[in-house]
Length: 481
Image 1 (cartoon, rainbow, N blue to C red):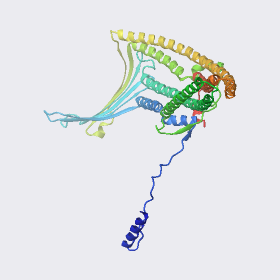
Image 2: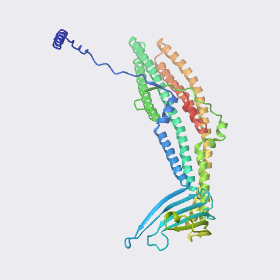
Image 3: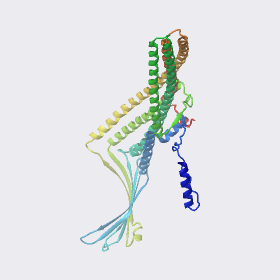
Image 4: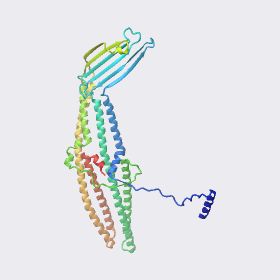
């Protein structure tokens, strides 16, 4: 076949005028696609990626941005407001046209006074008997004396906008801290399950060796069929345990990808940290001043202040309306626009303006509701402070328990390792059946899993202590390797 292909190639070369034909394509299967090794992902890398890709965290950042834009909009309403206008009137009956144009300006101060000004030029109809153009200037200053005299009343919209920004920023800080907790729990959980997979794999290897040895001894007549069945049952149990641990590790890997904002197919390896960044405080330090370090307590304290301001506003709105008004008005006129600008006459006016509704039930109900809300928020704030102290104490109790359990688990692991060596040696020498060896392997597996979980429980308990006490420094965790 190859000879025929060579002859055909020579003939094609002759037909092409002596040019050599291209060599035939090589035979065989196509080359496999290149493979890439999984990338190492430290817990610091996972946190840094999460702070740029976690969808919940990104949503909280958008809420903060929206609140800041809203505050900017409300704050602009306390700046000078200038509105130019133009109006043209036409009478269809007489065909007479008149025009008016000018500026209106106002300035609402956050502490109460309101300044309003206007400058208007009016063009009268051509057959107006006196002057064709007229100008009018008006400046007035209004100061509430009873209702609304409290500075918190005119400043309420700005205060609400500022509080919305502060609340969203604190929510973002809480979301960042909770993201650190989430990433650490998933990262350490994945590391623990990978360790459980290794332990289950070792147990399966030992179970397979024990099964082979039991079958060999059964064939030689030194053990009964029951020993073989027992070892086979242990092998099956170890296989199921390894499959479950591997499946849970895959689930935690997917959850870590989602929490960090990674692609669903992103492949990585992890290396569990031995300790947390920074040092944790003592329990007394953690309890002292915890309200000033937890954003939840800071927000609750500001809610109490908001309720106090709401009571002040409600009381101010219950008062009769009494405003002091100072105004300056001037007019000018002329045959053209420029001649109408000079002031021909002016006057200062000062007086009072007052009103009071006869039905004050709604205002009274508003004040009583504000007073009730204040009492509720005070109780909630005090209860939150007590709960924060309880959370700190509970977190430190869990930490002490985790450390005690780890010490017990380490000693128990040493005993289990000694026990399994003795049991295997006795079985291999024919001094006993494999019952003790199977039982010792099960105890060793439980001891290894207990020691593994107790080590990670210490890190998680230390993390809970930092979060509960408010000493969890976001920058330290994000900047770690």
